[in-house]
Length: 232
Image (cartoon, rainbow, N blue to C red; front, side):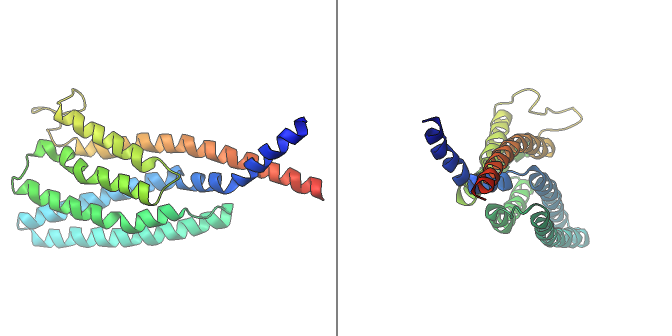
């Protein structure tokens, strides 16, 4: 009877191999960290380019915008080569969701960053609302990307939730999370910490979950090997 009960359980574990392989691929930490750092640099270059343009420094503006575009193209090509090498090494294909997010998410985000920089420079909103304003477009875009493509991942939801919570904390003037006048950092400079800090927290959570998914995947793969040996 015990053997009969184990058979359906083993079948379910074997059926779960594609699921855990997909979730491991979608929650790998290294692509998230690289993705975050490159985006911070690209957004910084794009923002600086717009700022220089508004101040009349057109040569610097062109240089920053060219660097942004060139960096984005190089990033896409490098990531594709890295994922191809990773597949050759491990046999785990690149997550389709990662490809789709990398393909469609950057340009809308960069466009929103450029628009928000122009609006801030024109006095539409004060500098201390920089993070809350960015959360208005960044959080929905992250949530949509996760819902549309990364069905087996929670990265977009978690990152959007943390970023949105920090934006609300700034509106409520929560100590530590909100900078005040007269310090080393001024109101609005929270942007320099919000993206990397929430990204690191999200990366740690994704790393833990990816290790869990990998453990499940190895268990199922080991079970498959035992069954194949028994059949032989």
